Image (cartoon, rainbow, N blue to C red; front, side, top):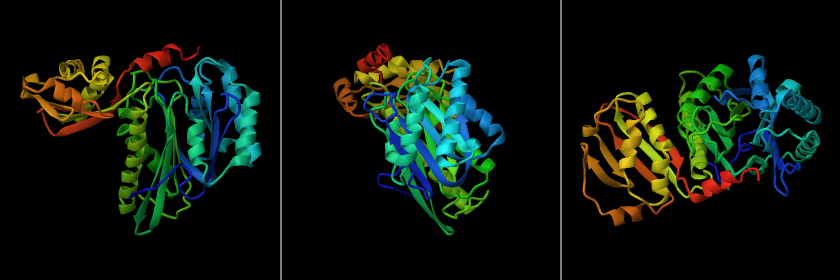
Length: 400
């Protein structure tokens, strides 16, 4: 497997994309189209929030009877969430418009939105976006498409990898947005995965869900789950490499898909609103993977852990505090803890360390916390970021 330099959703064969300004934001890209030149199989995962944005409802309804597609259209700046029937009417309007401009079936058009909740989408701006993006579609347009879906993100998030098999080479591309309102269960982000493999829809859906559980569902910024989270994967088969169950190609595909999703997940954690550091929490030697995941995510969601990391404060007791409220039974007198590369607890007993030296070790853009439960052989990893003054500022002034 090889990471492609400047790779994006248009790196796989047969995909084109565009990012344009439709007027939702001033002087910024805010609308994108991704187009598969041939029919593609589609799989998807969506938010688990009970309050669901109109494009999520639209896509879920579409996937009940349609497992293929050609296009996804995404706007940023307005979430089209909590907008009632008008929100769904806007989705229908957009899908019809895209189908006309790109000469595809209405049912081949998928949609997503991101931005402020409770505001109606301006249909005239959507029309401008569709028209401009349709004319701007390009085989190298993936990077601009990733930029167009940003909200409070500071950088676009794209990646692509290529894999050699005995049947030929295939490619997986991906893009994502998300920096706030990020919590597990497909929250809170938008992401699109593209690939040129040939694969059955049921198999693609299975592997996408598994990869999500090993990547996006292990990311948290603030514990809030969005109304708009959408991950759609398109597979158009143009590489000629077929992925069959229990084949060598399937194993390579799973590894490449996991790598792509985890890379995007880490980008989201690293770019959390106001973040200065990414935090990686590794829980080892748990009795079950589920329990390891619960502990890792509880630590990752702890405001006290996140603020300590922001302040370079080696207050490791907050890690134990968070682990202890994860709802998992364990013996604290067996646990070991490594904090930013320094072992601070062995078998439940605190170890002496140089506080100033450890504080200095935390002054990096990535901090690792490793908790050994001494209970078994299972493990889990979670990714988050610190809480800074800027996080409060961004979210305290989000609509004003």
